[in-house]
Image 1: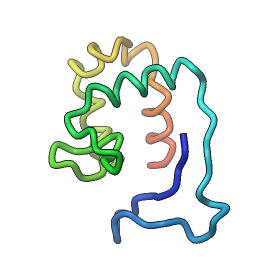
Image 2 (image 1 turned 180 degrees about the horizontal axis):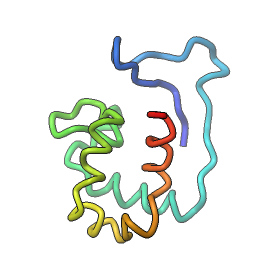
Image 3 (image 1 turned 180 degrees about the vertical axis):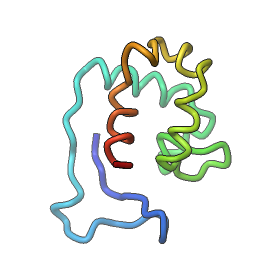
Length: 98
């Protein structure tokens, strides 16, 4: 996956400050497979669409993600027991919040 933009809560979508900041990131094949499945099931299939977007098509914020992740039906649908384990993405966001 290539990362060539980021989202700032204050200014929106921004380009990297340096060319070195736009880079490819490695991910396990299992995550790549899930991401492919997710991308195929999105309503907005434009190349410039956000991978994880709000209902309005705007970037999904960490707070928005946490609200959705707390919904037990979403947790069940995602296939894991929230009380037994956190998904890696949720762990990341929880760490970012402090």
